[in-house]
Image 1 (cartoon, rainbow, N blue to C red):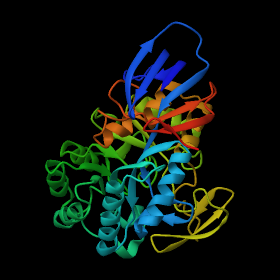
Image 2: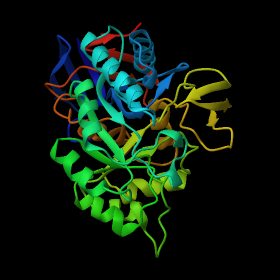
Image 3: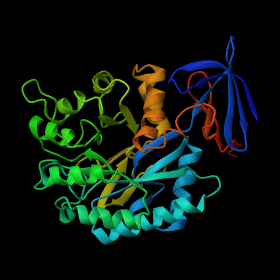
Length: 370
């Protein structure tokens, strides 16, 4: 297959005009040429933080559900993802990990690739639990993490923790040494505590601005500590509800080249208004806004492609926005050598778009989705 006269997003995180050749599911050549491109060719988007869609939840397990959710993702431009668990009893999380590992091995046709598992909870602060279920919160437990990784067959990539909890720093060191990407999340930590956690090996920040103290001039908190450390990537929910457009623009300045755009999509994504369940808690969805019964925001109903479109609409430079949804999450999952760019040797998971970022066709392994 040959894509001619397209504006493609290269490994240097810049757009180039030219031709792209695909053979046997792999990009084999890119040829830069002068001229006016008619369409955009993007790498498939990668979402490192999402819980489900179409009324189904990754934490519930079930191979059929995984297939349906992954097909929905692919159809909407997310070709790779990290299935994200909730704060639930360890047995429930273990079941979800086993199911995710089974789905990853199945290589389901027409579905997004499962590139990892993100463990959001249960090692969180009750003060910043957000939509997590307080009944199942636990202190950091390296043995539990190890057993869950065994169930996941090595697919657990990102593990979240509130660094102010007893034993958290030792947990972060142990998890980092074992190859996990540790993310600070659902935390009331101050600047010094967060700084110590990042210096101990934490390198990711879960849904920046949400479920953490704000960035204040005399109390910079977790956000200030993360922004100062160039090894830290920062998730940003791009649905336009969790973070104000001005704060989104600020995040791209605080974390240049380090923003990891996420949907934080929950089961109601792609479904109708109504009442759903998330972590054994009722969630009400009305006009795209998902809340617990007390009004707490409970994740997003957006697709990652819609989040990308929002970023550009809010004034983020297109190349920065695309990188935040492709190459940066690929690095977070450790798959940057195969995904996240239109470059030779990379998987031909591609999005053909109009010049104004309307999704036209999705390609998985070089094959167009019908």
